[in-house]
Length: 200
Image (tube, rainbow, N blue to C red; front, side):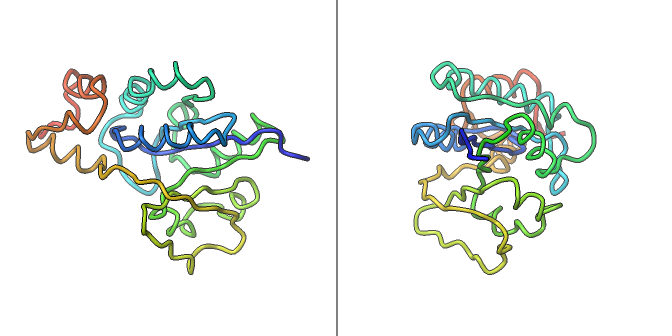
């Protein structure tokens, strides 16, 4: 079957979502290569722990992307992983979106650091037959392809990512250091109002 649309899937724990995420999303939306761009907050990531609940992380994604969604009609937020109990596996999400979008071309957006560990994913051969990968490299960064399964289809692009991480933001909050400039003002306000990531 010939693919009729190219649909981007951008999963992540978004713990919390920050300006680096927004920069990447807008860069990819402005590239006009996708008819639909779906952001997928992880429910219970099996490879790492999350500090904020799924409900809080989803709320922050919705706050952060509100203006973007008004501007880009192709942008969507999925509750699929948040609403499912148990560990979140990419292959389950990919299968779900494949069923929701029959015949369309699914493209999983992934950073080069995470892609270098792709062989550790569950059901990687099933993933390989269902989705292409768009690997985001920082300028000058070289992807080590030696551990990438030969069955995967992928392409690479360079995006000058902002030097921000969710871990850095959480550490700043725990240390009572300024963090507000690293994420949308609405998300910063939400974190304060809910007491998220504060030192215990």
